[in-house]
Image 1: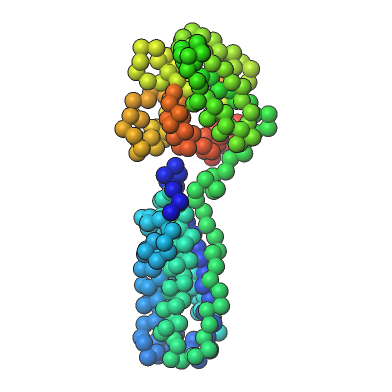
Image 2: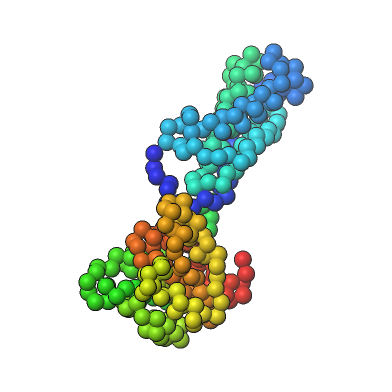
Amino acid sequence: MKSVSDKIETLRTAVAVSTLRTTPDAIARLKTNDLPKKDALVVARIAGISAAKKTSDLIPYCHPIPIDVVEINFEILPEKIIITSTVESIAKTGVEMEALTGASIAALTLYDMLKPLDQEMEIVSTKLFSKKGGKSSHKEWVPQGFQAAVIVTSDGTFEGKREDKSGQIIKERLEAYGITPSYMILPDDKDAICAKLKELCLQGIALIFTTGGTGLGPRDVTVEAAREIMDRDVPGIMEAARAYGQRRTPYAMLSRGLAAQKGKTLILNLPGSSNGVRETLNAIFPGVLHAYGMMEGAGH
């Protein structure tokens, strides 16, 4: 199975449709419940719901996920029955297969219950109608002329005693979104960090990432520097990051990282560890880019 450990949970919805073609006589008897096997639509609905919930048991590479909603509906036309399956879940992976399985099994159940009346009956199609959720449904466009910066705050890295990995991870993630950031290394000195943050804000840099200085060490002062220059904090960003990290390591609760707004600049304090940086980026991208439309007055 493909790992979905790095994904965030979002509301996922999928709709699938199966079409069963049969005779007008079979349709008429279905409508009046004049069938050798009674209550065909009721039984098919229950079968479809049950099947959607058991998809991971039936299809080997499907992840078991908590299903919040399964709806099976029927549209009865003169020579065919259209079965629509709708599935919802708050999960890390999509529910397309659950919707397709629900529609397929409901159609097969109707086939079984109508076959005494029509030996030529045919399931002519099963297809995905729509899906929503996940990062593909929360795409954010980078504004034209968008500029970003990465600041590594570490005495050891500044003195050349330690190789930077975390700043490089941030750079690579930004470059994946078409953003080429400036990059610099500073010592764990609050005045130096404050001065650089102010300078970058005055230059119109839209997004500043810092990495390092968010813990409880005596030289961890990056958060204090950001707090000193900010106009206001944006607590939800780091709440999301810490909640994501806490499900992976208990040490995430020890990060004091701050998300701050200065004018139209966002300053995000990331941990110094490469795993902490990677997890924070997974938690906040691409949703954090939505902030720039909001700062321009566009709202949600």
